[in-house]
Amino acid sequence: MRISVDISLYPLTEGYVEPILEFINKLEVNKNLVVKRNSLATQVFGEYREVMDCLDAEMEAVFNALPHSVFVMKFIGTDRADVVDV
Image (cartoon, rainbow, N blue to C red; front, side, top):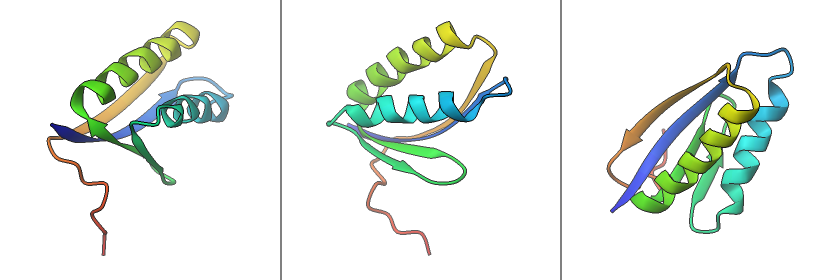
């Protein structure tokens, strides 16, 4: 089953931009995922287990480095990578 995830990361620190970019860059390393960036959030598309395993590892890394961080996510049970917003 393919899924779509909309993710926003809020590191509660003054230097918040670098941890966000590092998190996104690590997601993009996984060639089995489609990662799309925009100015408000990041979308990840792929097979359920692949997405969840990647998010699990990278979220843990963020929390180990910056425990005062917040993730806001929306999950959709279909792959919406090719849906065009109008």
